[in-house]
Image (cartoon, rainbow, N blue to C red; front, side):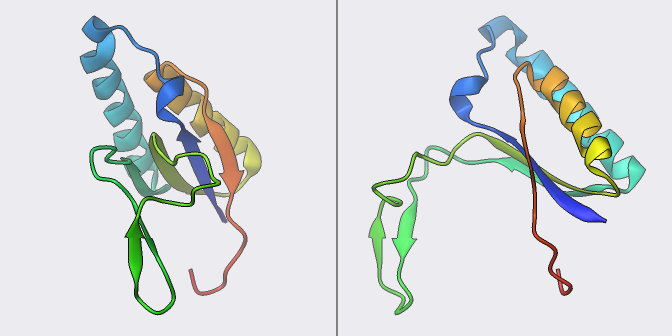
Length: 113
């Protein structure tokens, strides 16, 4: 089985304020379903109020991420699934709950992960 990253950037989630609570409930319901199905690995959102730091191999660090890269934000779900078709189906469920399209990527196989 492969691990799949299902994600969206913050700007993709355009939800009226009066619907935001329902979106949260719907998204949590999909996570509960994924846990019950035994495919859940991890999910969460980037805390955008905490700025990133860029850490070097020697342990030194500086505020901010890569200057040349787009910001990393939004929501992420990692599921372990038998097929890409299953991953697309779960991504569609998350897209429906979050009211926005989801990007689907597969992690490269690592025998110790």
